[in-house]
Length: 186
Image (cartoon, rainbow, N blue to C red; front, side):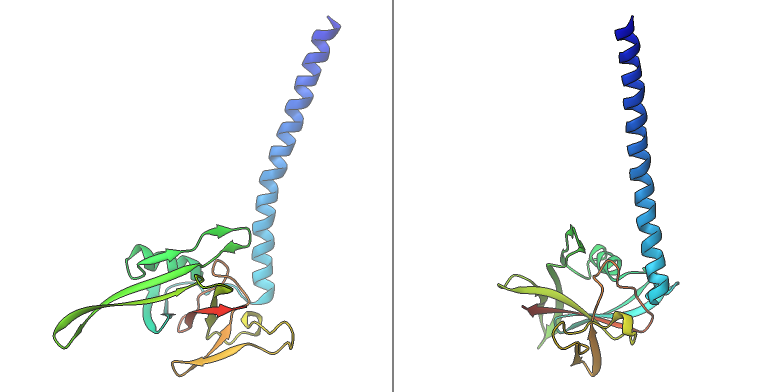
C-alpha cells in the first residue's frame, strides 16, 4: 500500500514539474517578444506602419517594391514569392536570418534579341558574406567599424548607403528608403 501511494505521489510531482517547465517555456517565448518590442521602441528602430515604397539593389539591379511588410527579410521573401527574386538562399540560423545568396534573372531586349541577365550577390567565395546597406538616416541603424568606430558608408547609385547594424529579420522598412545587398570580405 505504501509503494502505491509513493508511486502516485511521484507521478503527481513529476506531472506538476513537467507542467511548470512547459509553462516557463511558453512565458519565456512571450518575454523574448516583449523584450524585442521594448528594444525597438527605445532605440527608435520600430517599423513604419502601412504601405511603403522602397528600392532594393541586388548587384547593379534595382527593384522598386511597394509593400505592407515591416522588415527587410519579409520583403525579400515577398519578392521571391512574386518571382522578382529568382533565388533566395537565406536560412534561419542561431543569429536570425542569414542571407547566403540572392539572385534576379531579368530578360531584356538587346538589338531586337531577348537576353537574360543574371544579377547575383552571394557568400560563395571564401571569406565573404552578404552585407546589408540602407539609406535610412538613423544613428541606431548605422554600423560602425569595430576598430576605428567610424560609421561605415558607401556611395552608390547617387546615394549614401550605411552599413546596417541589424540583420534582415530585424531591419525595419521605411517609405522611400533604399536597401542594398553587397558581398563583403573579412
